[in-house]
Image (cartoon, rainbow, N blue to C red):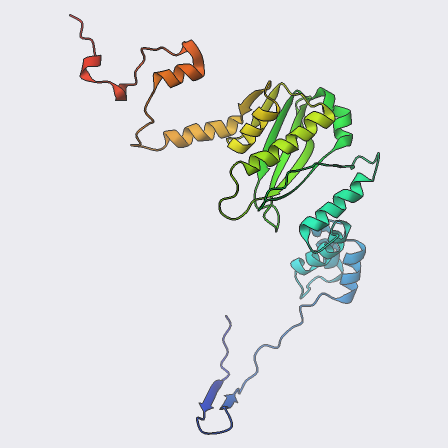
Length: 294
């Protein structure tokens, strides 16, 4: 903070028995640096509004050519452009309502590569969701999809909806098939509710587009895994290699933690006779388990 030798002071006197609540005396002997307007100039506003499709860097460069040392900031220029751009997609102050209106508009557009199809989701108390598929892409590439993957992201929007993306593998590249936005209640919601939403989302592709993958892929989210196993029971489900490696490295980096008790019956039930029924981890052995040869 800048300071100035202005000999300024403020004196306030309060009166208990007077009609005046207070007496304020303010002294200031020297002016500070005068305030400078940081408002965006009118000609700059007009230029930015007429050229909002340009990137922020390009807009700022063009403004600098005419105003080399502006008092307004680059952020101010960006905000003007943003207000123009958001009119292309914002239909209502309520973000969910706005999204549904926008999707409805694109459902009525045919053959432009951007049409969408609405996905019917369950109605569970405390949860809110919206989902759509991309019929133009599915019509062109859906028949060649043999592997589908789902990934999710948090904190991507102001309403705190989780974003789920369904991707199909086409000639070695990921192809978007549809998206699900899901908002969960704060705290504990209904058990299995998220899984029901994801299952309904996946079932849309199975029934409407006959999607029948040989492989499915997710991270370690149990809701996603269970939904895939329910909708595509014949597909081989795999975990993301990166997430698997991270889980192993995280587990190995923790020292002095007692591992889970090894139960050979549970292991053989899950993995079959390939598990040696006589194997016992060293940590679970006793002196009687060791055989001493002569």
